[in-house]
Length: 207
Image 1: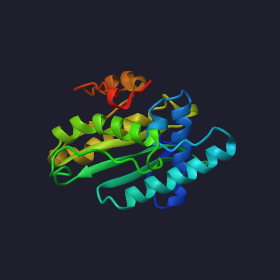
Image 2 (image 1 turned 45 degrees about the horizontal axis):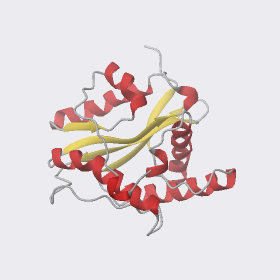
Image 3 (image 1 turned 30 degrees about the vertical axis):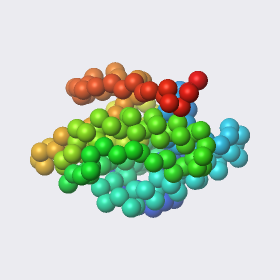
């Protein structure tokens, strides 16, 4: 078997995580994924705005992972160039992470009192309700997965099989929350679809 030019590693530092953030932002804006502006701080669209927002995004999500013992940040590196090809955050919960049942999600990246914060909390709380209801027991999942746009369709998504090899012996169920663009890939992996979400923003008088 030919040796792969890519390797998978745990992300060791915040500086290395910033490199994955660059890739995830590129993936979410090529093509544009609307949920990106909900779960990541967007203050503007100039190069300086984007650099500032990425830096704060890196800080917020690195700290969140560092304070969550069930969070694992991994990335895929090109062995020859050391460029980041993609990566994700994996969750492996060895106990029930929702002992009090479904709880509202708090947005910490948009300022208090802003409509963006209100919108993000409303959408994310509804989006996570089914997961919080279903997985009140040990389980695993994938969050914020992306591949550099220039390297799509190279098989990186198949790294999910490595995750299954780790969690299947534990007897855990696992989840992946996907965007509409990911449907074909998930089906090719034999991943079944349990539910879809539609969000109600009537209370927010959303346009």
